[in-house]
Image 1 (cartoon, rainbow, N blue to C red):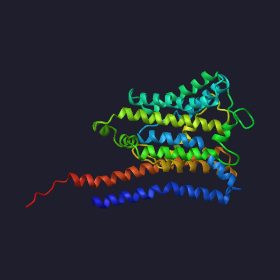
Image 2: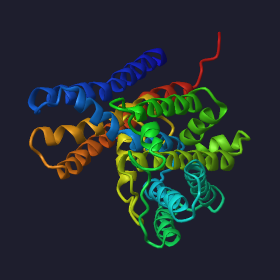
Image 3: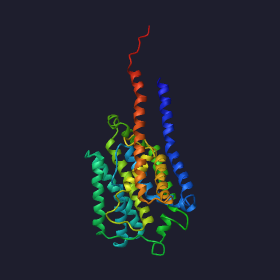
Image 4: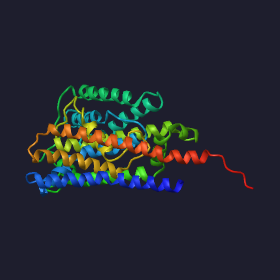
Length: 342
């Protein structure tokens, strides 16, 4: 019976792991057939470019969600870092290279603050990161004096910025950074002690704590890594949009979290993959680029993304219930009295 249950669990996992890739292929095929000029090199670049900064946000928040937490501040932290970096470059006269180094440092500071509030002060992650969202939103406005500062564009001083982080000629350079970040995040999650402990904390935090692991330390590290990726996302946001606006950023975290959920990471923690997150990001990007091609305005993306997220959460709940049903017979068998040998 235990062997059969294990086979059933593996079969369900294998089937569910194919849902996100299948959804991506179906969506892309649908828009390629019914969309105007969707199946083209230009649209492929649009899809890649719309995934840049959202991808970095999603990779970072995957660690937090697997650990059983959530981070609602990544969008405003990204904009805050971008705004302060632009202020340092334009208003304070910093060299662009030094100003760009400031962005990930700001992200790490906010991420570490989130981790301390959640791990040490025992604040609920939702409340802690909601507070940080507002703090970072206001902090960027205060430092910049609510002034927008433009990053370099082609034809201006330091025009290499766009070429190095966004597009060199017709080549989408940002895609190289996106896939490099994916490989780094995948390695951290799957091949390091940090990643294994994140899974353990998300699966059963109390049991992990009783086993002697410093749970607080690794939870803080998860939020700090999330902040680092948010700071890196700020660089690519500035490269794509040129002018981060003080006080903005709300909603970007929802796009990243939606991509993570669509990719199969469980909101209850303990399970998830970076491959799934990458696929979820591209599902979002395909949806964003595809809807205008069939004559729907951009705001339809929000509507359909909400439907997809609801479906992904319902699937996650069904998966968790199925796992409980599979484990239940095993617990019954393990607890059954053993017959004494004759």
